[in-house]
Image (cartoon, helix red, strand yellow):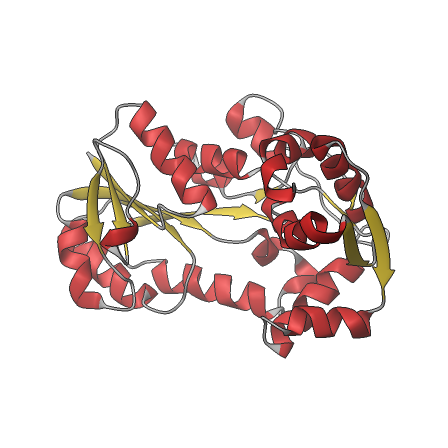
Length: 279
């Protein structure tokens, strides 16, 4: 029973791959560029791209389960190829925003919902994993922290419960092991409600040096975010951050603890795991 991990070089996909390998599960990793396949010995590696349907049959040959990241481009063709290949289950890294009522028109939500819709009913059982806020989002601050020991934050008091990529991968592994879809597909968060400033303080503790928080307005934040994102995505990010400042605007669930049988890994642990990224 071979499991294909699409996006195996990603922060979460790599943990899924490692978990399958540790469990002795036959596993295959797909990459767009074979020259970047650095998974070590014992991993079957294939070249595949969801936007190039002709690469999918070979990648899916003999595969019964797939883990992949949500991406609407190519999802329909992937669903057809998975059905033909006899894939039984697809575990999709989606977004918890699809379960948040005030985020229904958010373009990030729309993209993830579209991917879920394209794969639903395509043949294989679809099991979405829906983390709301990734602890890894804090890596966006790494360059500023390394160079100036300063972070510019819009709405630094915005609260969320970020979740470690290892816990997201662990929930995905539970889904691949047959956990009930209604359990693993529920809104997924970390255990601790933290402000953005709290997160910076925990990173400072991990690196052993003070880090200054510089509060900025939404205008400057738009300029900063706009360098790498579309205006619609920038609006979505700012809306989400702004909601975290409002009563009832943030969410914390017990999904991870119910699925994993333990509390989620703390953000402080995440910061220690990634301290080198901020030094």
